[in-house]
Length: 253
Image (cartoon, rainbow, N blue to C red; front, side, top):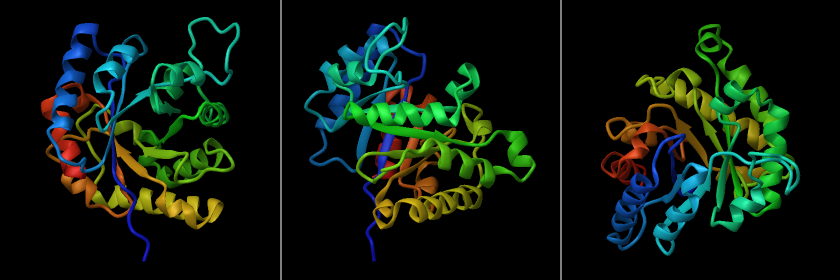
């Protein structure tokens, strides 16, 4: 029997944080990480671009990894306002979120563009966290599995493995709302994702980590982690304070 993947808890700070606030949060998380003899899971913080460097300096040498929230598909060029995956790797990033629903909605990103960004991330030696998820209308119409299946098919590049990719399922209607799907609804989607990924990429994909995101908090993290094929969490608002993020890390460990 194949062992379960090592859990990953990723904090997505989104567009939040001053230099001072980011330093305080990163310092607090670093101290909590240093206080443990061994990390219960892999830990990731994905910060706004302006604090990537100072946060990396504070978490360097701990069990916490650094990630960004988006990248451009090109390595360099005339793309004002964008950052390439190579630039992110240069300042200490190990991961980058691609295809978050807020990018898909606010910037019109398509599955094919998300796929290109995942390829760019790998090119630079980063692990893309590829996000998928349905809207409330799609859920109510009974289309959740079809929507997530299509996004998976078109957003994951060829050559996807457990070591070079993470997938995060975030139902759009649960992000930042305080609402979460039932355990059965989460299990249905994660089981379907595991099956689809396995059919396309083979046995190695059993170790590919499938995260759940969408109003994850200290009160529901333990229940969510107990769900089959949930290998960690992508945490939004609760990642902005050490006292709410760290209990989630401990729950997933």
